[in-house]
Amino acid sequence: MKFSFRHIQIFYCASLLAIIFGCIGCHTPHERIDGKAYPVIIDRFDRALTSYPQLDSTDRAAFRDSYSPFFPIYSMYVLGLSDAPEFVSGIEKFLSDSIIAGLYRDTYIRFDNLSGTEREMGKAFGRLHSLYPNLYIPKIQSHISGLNQSIVTTDSVLSISLDSYLGEEYPLYEQRFYNYERGNKTPERIVPDVIEVILRQHFPPANRRSTLLDRIVYEGKLLYLSSLLQPDLTEATLSGYTAQQMEWCKENEPQIWARIVSNGDLFSSDNLLINKYILPAPFTSPVQQDAPGRIGRWVGWQIVKQYVKRNSISASQISLSADDAQSILKASGYTGGK
Image (cartoon, rainbow, N blue to C red; front, side, top):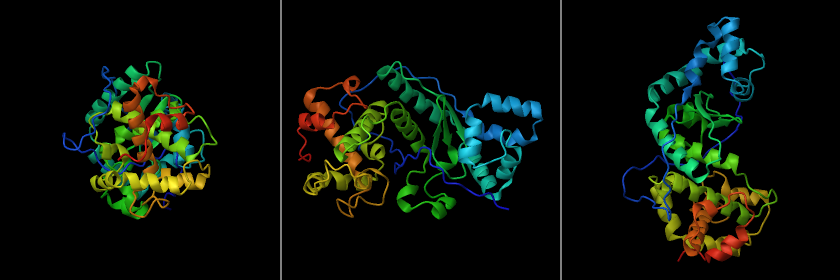
């Protein structure tokens, strides 16, 4: 009997392109943040789990204790197992499934060593700690989800689903994900996705009855702060766009803004409409079919960048939780970039 995958989305980070190294096309933020690198060691829960079914009851209890509270969350809500509290038979069935065995094999090959990821994450965490000294940085670990969500978090742990980052050409992705989703699935997306999740977790939007303007400015703040925490990434990478998509956005920025305004969408609180601008999609339908998905996030970033530059605002003065989108738009003087 094949293991049945459950698509439970705890955190889905949908950026679209691998990091492009080098100075060509790099985004230079208005402000640079210095910070001592934070020591990061990614705990390989994915590897430790393979021995779990063979342990005796005492050692299994010690294993569960050492990976608490993540282990029951992973077992119940990621894998969909029901044989609590030990989950022995469920874990054994999961690990013996041929698809999962293939994912484990390919993940071991692709991520035999995570030192480079740990190093880049440590740099970003150092800048994050410099900007927000009281912000708690969780324990970082990795797991295999069976192609479910990319990131799982608890109050104390952030776990990375390594099988979500095997490269956009990975054969199983073609069967499970759309073309516009597969570009997310690269090893270079791990650190940007982790940073985005931590920012969202610690600084959720202030107003649940938000308008499109509220949402795009919030998303713009996230992207702006992400650019400060990861200054070597290109604007295309941070936006989740290809170079061609980024060029289209820049060339059509006035028309994009004019369409949003003329549609009367800016102050709409219709969640279905807002999601068309914010959530992953092959294109942003309220603008036009040539417009990349999630274009509202990119527009919000342009507003925030102009606001920061025009008003000499420091990163520490930007409140991700504040309900200040209208005042930011007004102070930015943004009218479409050109």
